[in-house]
Structure formats: C-alpha cells, structure tokens
Amino acid sequence: MTKIEQAAHALKEGHLVAIPTETVYGLGADACNPSAVAKIYAAKGRPADHPLIVHFSNPALLSSWTTEIPDYALKLSRAFWPGPMSLVLKRTSLAGDFVTGGQDTVAVRVPSHPVARAVLAEFEKLGGLGVAAPSANRFGKVSPTNAAAVEQELLGHLSTDDLILEGGDSEVGIESTIIDCTGELPKVLRPGAITVEMISEVTGLEVSKGPTKIRVSGSLDSHYAPKAKVVLDAEPAAGDGFIASANVPTPTGVIRLLEPKDDQEYARGLYLALRQADALGLAKVVAISPTGAGIAEAIRDRLSRASH
Ligand code: TXA
Ligand code: MG
Image 1 (cartoon, rainbow, N blue to C red):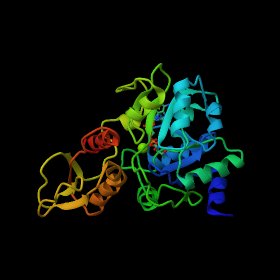
Image 2: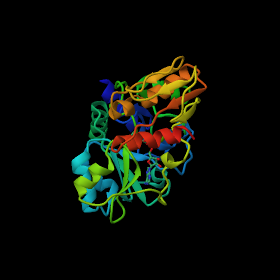
Image 3: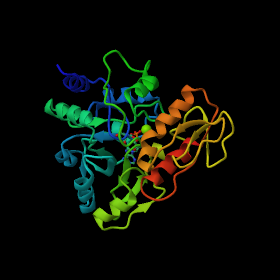
C-alpha cells in the first residue's frame, strides 16, 4: 500500500491522520464516525462544543453535507475550491452534533494541497464522505505548517495507529478564510488568503465582517499564541525576537525571526517564526504588523490574537 492508501484506510478504520493542507496541517478523522471525531478533541485538548471543518475532494459532496445553499455560495465554491476557503452552511443530517458542536450549520472545505486531495479522494473511493480536521495543534496554540511542527504539538497525544503525513511547508501558512453563507450576504468569520475584495468581486455582493452569534474558536481573543510574549508595533530591545517585513532593518542585538519580502511570504512564515521563538526560548517577540488590505488583514488578525 502507498502512504496515501494507508492513510485513507486508517481514516476509514477510525484512526487519526495529520494531513498537510495549503493553509496549515489538519488533524483528520472520519467525519461520520463519532468515536473517531472524539479522538480529535482528546488529542487537541479542545472543548467539545467547538465545531470542526469537514473536508472532501469531490465538490459534489457539498450537497451531501449542506442544504439551503445560496447562489453566492455556489459562486464562491466554483471560484475558490480547491483552495483556502471554508463555507458555513445549513447542515444536512449527515453532519452530526459531534462535528458541529450542536449547531445547525456545518463548515466545509475542499483543500488544494496535492497530498490532502489524494488522501481525501482515496478515502472517498473507500466510501468515505468527509474528513473532519481542525488545525493539528494543541488547543489555543500556534497552528503547525509542516510535519515536524505537528510532531512537536501532538506527539504523546496520538496512538500508534494514527499517522502524520509529510507534505512540506504549507504554501499559504495561515488558516482558511471562513465565510458564513447562511445569510443574505456573505460574512467573513475568520479572514484568510481569500480576501473580502475577492469574495465581493466573485459574488457581486457586499461582504460583511465582524462579530457573529456563531461560535468560532479562532474568534477567541487569545489564540494562535506561542509561549513567548508577542508585542505588536513596538521598538524591540536586545535579546527580543523580531518579525517585520524585509524593508525594516534589524536593530542591534535583536534576533530576526522573519523578514518577508511581501504579505504572502509574511503569512507563510509567521507560524514558523513564532515556533522558532519558542525553540530559542525567547521571552518576547516584537512583530511589526503589515499595513494594507488583502491577506495583510488576516496576518494582523493572527498577530493580534497571538499577542493577547
Ligand atoms: O485552514 C483551515 O481551515 C484548517 C485546515 C486544516 O483546513 N482548519 C482549521 O480548523 O483551521 P480549526 O478547527 O482549527 O478552525 C476552524 C474554525 C474554528 O474556529 C471553528 O469554531 C470554526 O472554524 N467553525 C467550524 N464549524 C463552524 C460553524 N458551523 N460555524 C461557525 N464556525 C465554525
Ligand atoms: Mg485551529
């Protein structure tokens, strides 16, 4: 059996598989198997009422998991799947309370990473319908963007039947854009690489943002946090870690953790830089937020949560 076939079988048998995606690595389980999904919550130490995203490769499965799909959601799915976008829609009976945290909606995503696509397709060949996968980190911690980071987060919390798949560094580096599609207008619950401008252009609609009744654990003020204290837009002192775009020079005695040439590179490297700070045992990291629109907004969102 290939690694991909092994992983698909492991999922079908109710084990956990850490799967590389283009956003971050996910910790996957068969979304139709309550005891498999329970293992995700145990491994992450995540509260049971925090809902999960269901992943599949065949876009036709959208109508197996969700109903009352507005036209704009279909447009979004055609434009941005496979890719770094999750849609929240009314659930069908396939989406159990154990996946949705008891809500009447479910979040779904078709990822584009070749390894994720291959595992999901193979799982679907075996009769699987979807893989529930949160980011493969312990609750509240920084999401992993490569296999080594997953091991760091979860070793000791996985069983010997569980697998971690290798898929290089995640291309996007921050979690998918989550869009609530249950209202008249699309609403961004978590910013990401699919930006408000892109959503607006594809749907021809105004996009709303901001607080929502729906529970999003990524919307807790403190999240994505390393051990080091993260301070935004301040002057770093000697011995501090420092994250800023490449055109900002490194002050003397400061430990440069990231110097991205553009916002894409900033997003791609951010979580590795925060991990690096912890690996070096730094007490403090100063980050200079990127300005501007697009994915910079998502970076500011993650920086602000990491700094709480
Ligand atoms: O990029 C991603 O989305 C990654 C990869 C693995 O796909 N996954 C990810 O999952 O970030 P997680 O569980 O770490 O974050 C998913 C967020 C949570 O904050 C959760 O509360 C929210 O999605 N969510 C899930 N179902 C929801 C629903 N029905 N309504 C509102 N928010 C939901
Ligand atoms: Mg997460």
